[in-house]
Length: 129
Image (tube, rainbow, N blue to C red; front, side, top):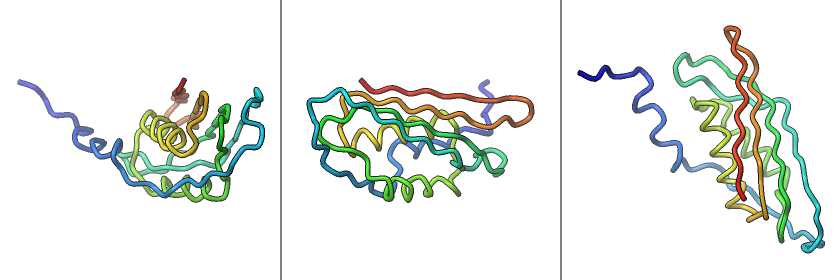
């Protein structure tokens, strides 16, 4: 007999979750090997099990082809997560997927460095190539 986890059915909606739009702007050096790095030292979301806040530094690195992330809309996009119960692994992958969809980069990497809680620190890295 399978025991049901208290986490089951809590995250099924994440891949299709409607998030705020991330705007973009046209990059004028499309053939250059320019790499961008965005650091977000005050990212917050909520633990889906306890409802307590999770704090992290997100690092978004990418090489634009034609478009770059517009930072004001990206900041508003990230604020969406402030009250959302979501696993660390899902945050990083959702941010990666939404950002790739917005700007179609050559490559992108999103790293989430989540603050220690209960003696455990989590770092999650997701890549798009």
